[in-house]
Length: 467
Image (tube, rainbow, N blue to C red; front, top):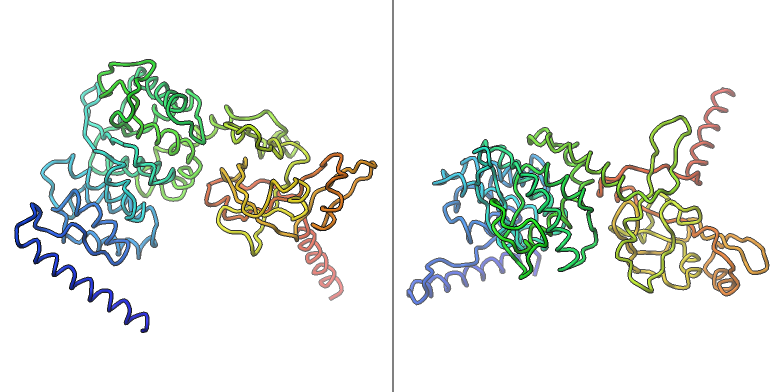
């Protein structure tokens, strides 16, 4: 059976099954007359049907999926701008004139998040518990998004981008920004700390100053219902906070989302922020500066010696929550640690970094193919793979000799005689990891590729002189 025949067969049998299901529902033995699971053949249908069937039947057959396909042709498939555009158009009444603005915003945010998460997670239905319009102390209206625990299924990037999406919807329908009082700002900081210390320790713990900075600047209210039977340690009984208990969904956004994905947000704002009216999110650059200042380890900084700002500031944040017994191969910015090498080998995959096989042996097998490592830059973590065309480690042996180990076999021979590892070797990181994580490129070491370019330029110069 050919591929086209196979899919035609699947489609035909699916239609037959739905006909049987419709006949069963027509017997009125079930309170629901419609089939609960809609058929979706592509991402636009999945993204729209997931939310429409469950929450907004009035959007059925209004052309939402078709419009998403048009936006995919304009922006590209899986582009977050598709989410922002379809969300704002739904909220603005392009497909249906909702009875109230709150329901319109609710639909726009959920459908946008559904597309952002591929239409396959519970995030748009359960991770976002509700979307409300509430009133600031000055009488102006603002948008409030209620998050709950299942927002974790969206992942950190999507949960952070959902806040920007909600802000774009807010801006589209003309609502004012969220204006938290000083007490509410302090409540955010206290609650996030309480969640981290008393509920679950996450991979990143922002300082109180960071949480307060974010909560002061986010234009929509990030809130949620109580998810734990634990009350916050301070700042209770606030007028615009519905509960004294810890709001788990909100804390997830403030731990896994906004602070952890600040660099990615900065990248989006620089790329297409003005197109979607998000230029007021440029405060994220100030937040990143604050984050670097707080978590700087005070290590060596590279500079050109002419008074410019340092190209790199070491941060020891990745060493937080270090498990006892796990090895630390290098502290941030320390000489003798791994040397950043730009490039990709056949073994490099997504978010993977390559190490010389000799390095794997010299570290006594702690680094092996597939080992998961926490790293300082440019990603949060990586998986190790071997590559023998990069530099291996330099070691001092017990007899006082210093040797660069270039093969795994030699590393096996000397591993028991190593007195000190002077240099761990190269860590091969693809350029795409810097782009994906919105990180600046660090200065490259002088490697073979630089020498090759200089040789080519010199030879070309000699040819021109000879000619």
